[in-house]
Image (cartoon, rainbow, N blue to C red; front, side):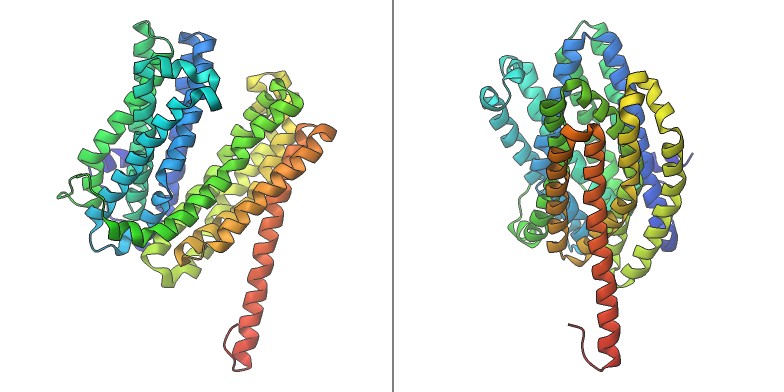
Length: 438
C-alpha cells in the first residue's frame, strides 16, 4: 500500500525526526528490490539464452556500469548536497542531466571505437549497429537514472528511488523473457537492459521528477556555467572518491583470476555478493544522512549519532545470521562454493562493522564539504586492500583477500575514531583554557 501511494505521488508526509529512518529503509528496500530482480533476470537469462550470450552480456553490462560511473562526474553527490539550497532547482537538475548524459554518449563512443585496444572480446559490439546504439544509450541512461535518484533523495522522497527500482527491474525481466521468445541472442539481453533503462528514464522525466520537484517541472537540455562552477569542486572530489572506492571491487576479480585462476574468482564473486547484502545497510543510511544533513547541517551531530544507532541495530542480527549460517547459504550455489568461500564470507561480513564507521564519516564530511579526508581514506583502503591481497593470496588463498579487506576497513575506521577522540579532547581542553580550537 505504501508503495502504491509513492507511485501515485501521494506519499504521506513524514515528520523530520523520523525522516532519516524512513529514507534509509526506502533505500535498503530499493537495494533489496534491485537484488531480487537481478536474480530473476540472470536466472531467466541462464535458462533461456546460451552461456556464451550470457557471459558476453555480463561483460557488456560491466563496461556500461564503469562508463556510467565516469559519466556521472560526481554530480549525483553534488545534487544531494546543493539542490536543497538551489534557487533554481529545475535548472540545476536539467543542467546536471544534460552534462552527465552527454558525457556518457561521448565515453560510450570512445569505448566502442577503441574496443580493439582495451577489450577485444567485446568487438562484436562494434560489428553490430544495434549493440553499438544500445551500449551508447545504456551508458547515458544509466548516468541519468543515477542523477534522478539523487534528486529524489535530495528532496526527501526516497520512496521514489524504490519505485524507480521496481520499474527498471520489472521491465528488464519482462523484456528479457520476451526477446528470448523472439529468438534474439546477446542483442536480446542487452536490449532488455536498455528497454528497462528507457522506460525508467521516461517515467522519471514525466512522472517521478515532477513529483519530487513540483508539477511545473519539465526537462529541457541546458548547460548553465554557474551551476557547473558552483558544483564542480565538490563534484570532482566525490567523483574521485567514488572511483577510488569502486577500484578494489573492479580490480580484485582480475587479480584473483591472474593469481589463482577463474574458479577461485567464481568463489570470490559469490561470497562477495552475499556479503554485499550486509553493506546495503550502512550504504543506505550513510546516503540518507548525507541528504538530511544537507538540509540542516546544524543538526548534523544528532543525525550522525542517530544514523550510527540505526546502522548497528540493523547490522547486528544480519551479521550474526551470516556468521552462523553463511556456509549453509553458500550451499545453494554448490558444495565447493561453501567449502572454498565460507571463511572469506566471514571476513567480508566482519568488515562491515568498521565499514559502517567509514561510511558515516564519508556522509558527515560530504555535508561539511571537507572531502580531503574522504579521498585520503579511499586511497588508503585501495592501497591496503590490493597490497595485502597480492601478498596473502598466494599464501592463504581467498581468505587472504578477506583479511586484506578487513584490515583496510578496520585501519581506516581506527584512524577516524582516534582523530575524532583527539579533536573532542583538544576542543574541550581549549575551551577550558579559554583558547580557541586549533
